[in-house]
Length: 147
View (cartoon, helix red, strand yellow):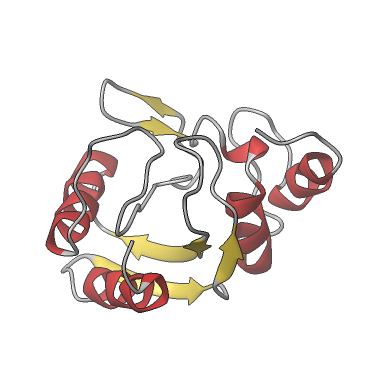
């Protein structure tokens, strides 16, 4: 919702100003059709970033959710229209599953809108559970029907 590209740029700018977070690399912006959720949503803009952080995963999630809130994110309809949605797709080689956070992201391997920008910046990163690289996941996903 809103000026998606500007919101995406603003989100990365705000993340870069958080103590303990350093943006290493940012992908291009990708325009994609929405997956799931209500029909007739506008296209989304997606990007992937490689960050270095001193924060623990739950601390990073808290900071991300604060950026989302500042940028007008309101959680109402699952997979519905929103100003911004920032996910932690992976966190080094960690596999984490808590009530509020699952890493690697549980559906990343099914989502071209995650894999395409991730492959641009980290094609050789290996999924800590599946053992395959982002490039391999992308090649497989391109040959699958999408949700």
